[in-house]
Image (cartoon, rainbow, N blue to C red):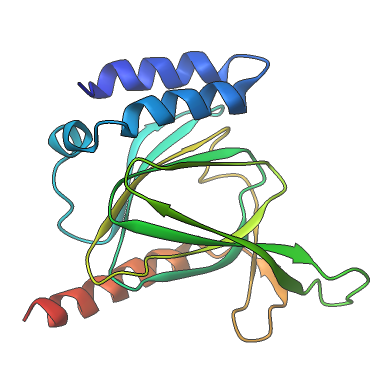
Length: 187
């Protein structure tokens, strides 16, 4: 059974360990083993959004609800992260910097598709983009080894793949735009 308070305590404990990323990966893996219990605790996703479940200088726990067919451009976190899917799907493209490119451009390097009960640890230097490839909402627990909202990060413009500072407001607008499309889709 997934208990949100116990889950937060386990995440806080794992984040304080020397081997925080593998420890957190174990915590998230256990949490999403029973997706029905996670859904019961967090509620059935109703709209695309980012819900903050816990936030401190050392740890952020988010419930990320991706809208149908929603894509977030390539970006960094500048901290480790672990993703766990409890409903829907999430496709991650991993990117690498093009050596010597004067505009900091990136190229696709690998991909990882995540389904219900699957997890994905990301190191602090990873560049990735995220797509919900299905026509329904996807729910995922995202845990970060720092304050996700205050650490300066980078993102890449999707057409030219040139580097720029991460724009939190633009990203949040993408969630709202996804909600508008979702409401139209629902009729």
